[in-house]
Length: 43
Image (cartoon, rainbow, N blue to C red; front, side):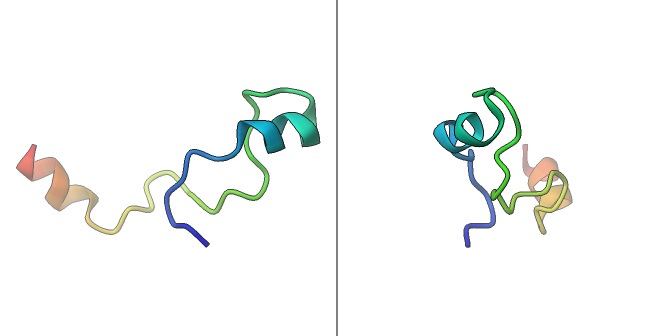
């Protein structure tokens, strides 16, 4: 499963009736990127 994704708007809509709702099968968790601090230092 993909670690980072935008989710599926169509699946969110089909499951919840709201296209902007959280996509229920997306594995992404905010703050879970392993090199977040290093990337921030480069920017």
